Structure formats: structure tokens, C-alpha cells
Image 1 (cartoon, one colour):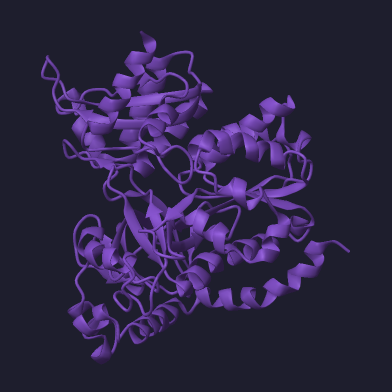
Image 2 (cartoon, rainbow, N blue to C red):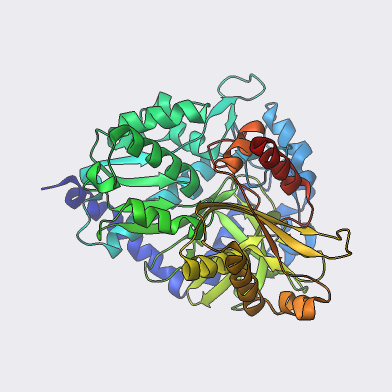
Length: 501
């Protein structure tokens, strides 16, 4: 009997618990809020915001403002210096260095013991539970798991306190038994130099019976391509014949899907999206035929949503389908009414299912066009489908006015397979964006406000080189997709020009 068959019953009780998401969403969330307020009422933050007398959601909103990182930064820094009972009970020794943006200024997100177990590891457990439910023939535990992680470093030299990528914190604290079914070895997984780490991971993993892989699509692809070069194989199943699933998250999978399907041709391969961030684990793709994710409601994360088109912030039970919301969270890691920076759109409210539509700061609205990442991903997917092209990385920004007083969007795209006709690709992308976004369509009308978009092909490796120059290669670092300013695209264009000379 395989190990998977022995382990399956461990997940059965949780599957019964998850059924409550179908009909008891509001109650689950009210229970979470009650727990958070009660647990933190004697903290400095709890005393300042009347947690002891807070009776429910309405009271909570009355006494607690919405926060960005800047509002909590001072308290988090005191926590990092060893102070206790500030935002969450006790002393917190782990801090996830957030890579949700590529700004030079890093964010340090507290990760409490409770948050580690009941948010982050709970998400990993449920990923497996749902996958096994959907795949009765799975042999997931009969082989190894390749888990990509970042690195960590001492936090202000305090004993036992560390700061780093969330993935490194998870690997550092993982149950020792899990190391028996995981590759690479811990010291390799936590290396800080991604280029050295990539080859070591490839060499360690290529001789193992890997059945599942987990990580950010862009960095995982880099590791797998490295392994293909070393082994001389064409398809991944030649190295790992029993590989069956990729648990992916961190960035949208759409730009990478075709490359994975070319690399892994086995009909038994599955892909499962997860929404795990430094701030928490929020969603799981519970149905392989549905691209939306189930919002996880009983992890110690209380959710609120701010309509992107204006209007009052609402709790989960106040959301509507097909509206864009900025997500606000309160967690057992001490984040209170924290604006995480992601935007979501609900596809169902029974159960609560959603898609990530973008970032609150990752959009272009220079001329009233309100172009979001969701539009960009769909537009690129359409242009690729029509032309056979494949996009590896991209970023876009406005050109406010050129020498001919023309305004447009400028796209810098690194293709893994270039279109035969770049102008046709650009035209298809522009056409699809107009179909997806009425504001963009209105601004494009007769080229009066906004001219046809421009595409500049990037040389191979440009975006990786740019991240490397910024010390952000590997881990969970991401390329900014859309920006209202030209800061990032100008840096990239300059690097692209230099390499062509």
C-alpha cells in the first residue's frame, strides 16, 4: 500500500469542515473577528482601540481606522527590536520581507506562531486536502515534493529572530517529518544567491521521484529549464515520470501556462492556484474546472472590501459579484484593517469565490482608462492565442505626451516565442483591451485621447537582469505589470538599450 493511501484519512475531517464555507460564510467570519479582538485586547493596539468593549463588527469599524504599512511601520519596528504585546500578544520573532512590490523600501510583515500554524500552514494543508479530494487516484505522497523557497537573515541580531521571504520562514519552521518527503535539502533551499541555488536545486532534485512542485511560476520555470539543460531531456516527465501537480501562486499563471504545457506534456499533470502572500494565505482553487478560488474563511483572517469605484467598505457578507474590491485584512499576525494592495472580484457568494483582478497600485489610469492587470492578462492571452506567440514577462506604462503631442500606452514585452508580425500582435492586444474595458475603449475612440498602444520587444533575460541589479532575483519577487508612472519602464528601457549596443 502506498503512503498516499495511508495518509488520505488524515484529511477527511478537514473536508467536512470546509463544507461550512458553502453556507456559513458570515458566521465563520464573525467567529474569526471575535477571536482576534478577544486575543489582542490586552495588547497596546487593543487598548488604544477599545478591543475590551468591542461587541461586534460595527463597533470594530467605529474604533479602528484602515491602515497601510506606513501607519503600522513604527509599531512593527519596535516589535522587531524585541518589544512584546504591541500588535499581537507576546513577542514575535519572524518577519516576512514583503515582495508584493518592487519598491526599494521593503515591508516587514510580522508572522506570529499562531499565524504560522493557523494561516500559512493551514493553507498548505488545505491545498493538499482539496487536491486529494479532486484526484482520487493521486499518489502524491509516494514521492517527493519540490518546494521553492527564498532566504532569511538575522533580524537586528536578536537571538532567534529572523527576517526573510515568507517561503524561507515556512521551510525553517516546517515539521521535521515533512523534510523526509521534500527536496531540496534545507541548506540549499535557503541559499540567498538564486543563480547558485537554481543549479543546486536542479541537480539535487533531478534524481528524485518528484510527484509535486510548489512555487512562483517564473522562478520554478527557471529551475526546471536549468534541469532540462543539465539532463539533456526535452520534457519534464522524462526526468520525473510520476509528477502530477504544480501548486502555484505569487503571480498570474496565464503568461506561463503555455510554456509549462510544452515542458510537461503528460495528460496526468494538474495545476492548482493558491493565493498565499506574506500577509496571509487567502484562497485556493477548489475546482480544477473553475479558475476562481475559494476564499478561506476560518484561518484567523478577517476580510473587508473597499469598492474600487467608490462607496463604503463592506464586510464579506456585503460584497457583490462582478465588482472590483480592494482587500482589507485583520489577522492573527497583528495586521489590523490592513490594506494589502490586491484587488479581487467575486465570481460567487455561495460559497465565496473570487479571482485576483490586480493591485491597487498596479494599474494605468493616466487618462481615465482604468486599465487593470486582469484586463492586461486577458488581452495578452488573446493576442498570444491568435498569433502563436508566448509572453514570458512584461510591463506597461503611459507615454504622457511625445513630441507630436500624442499619448499612448507603451508595453515592454519579453517573448519566449515572438509573433511573426509584431504590429498584428499589438493590434489584437489593443482590440481585446477595448472589448474588456469600456473606459479604455472610450479613451481610444478615434485616437482622440489615447493613441494605439506601442510594443517594444525586450531582449531575452532583461527582466531577470533588472531584478538582479535591484537585489530581487529569485524568491517571491515580481515584475510590476502596470504602472501609472514611467519609473520602472525607463530603467528597463535603458538596460535594454545598453545591451543592444
